[in-house]
Image 1 (cartoon, helix red, strand yellow):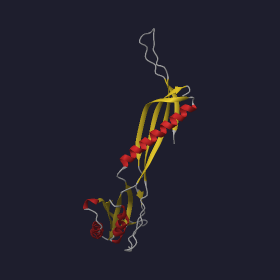
Image 2 (cartoon, rainbow, N blue to C red):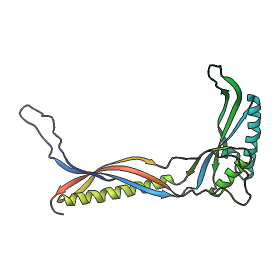
Image 3 (cartoon, rainbow, N blue to C red):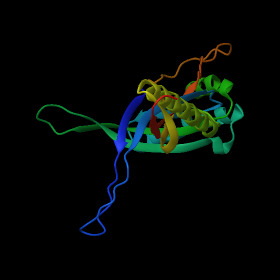
Image 4 (tube, rainbow, N blue to C red):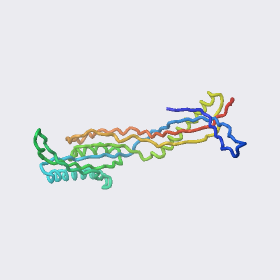
Length: 238
């Protein structure tokens, strides 16, 4: 939403002597806030894939987890992913207890979760990556984030768009006030924003058809920038 303010800036100097003082004439100004955004197409993705196992002992749960996670990683490597495209981001071992009224908690097993971060540089591989991981024992896909490599160029385009909007709005406000805008006095450029990662519900392991992959639609991303500007205002007809 565009915000426009018209105000007069008055600066008064400190008296140099008790008998005299100097003031600077008021400078009418127009302040405008504007928003610019640019659409970009993602060209890669980041996925977090987890293997969760449970067993009566921590060692057994860890061993089963290691076997399944190795199978998942081997399957992803077979799809063409490099070793540095797959990295462990979380490994967690925790006990599971049963609680009953008026009794001490009873240890009934251990849970192990191993989560890997997967960089997918070819969008058509996203569905096959998810399917291969689930087929080999992964049972949680907790995050899918689409990324674009050209966000810096898009940010500068968004800045240009926002400044053009601000100038057009300042010019319209000045004409409505019976004058015209003069020179640009100030521009403040805020941070830029891209969409956050898409959360994904837990996915259970399932049999995967060789003919049908999980459909993934990356869509577009919006890079947006907010700016504020100040312009001098000249009264009178243009």
